[in-house]
Length: 74
Image (tube, rainbow, N blue to C red):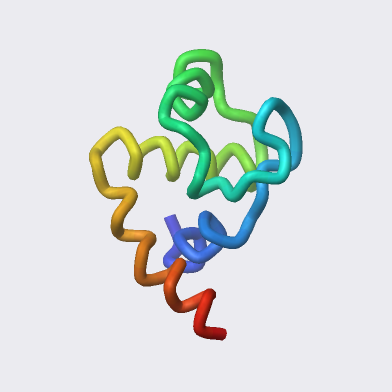
């Protein structure tokens, strides 16, 4: 993981599927769990989904809050 990836979680939208257009950081846990079971897509989106799954699964989603607040102040 690169530190910039955390910022991407609160700025990058899901490009396809049921939650198309929703920020990756806002995807529901059951959707992230589905990807973990079925396989993450290749490339950057898969890497970000896997990272968000790890954060969500381990109860660390609140680590993204300062980045969310930083974005709203800009």
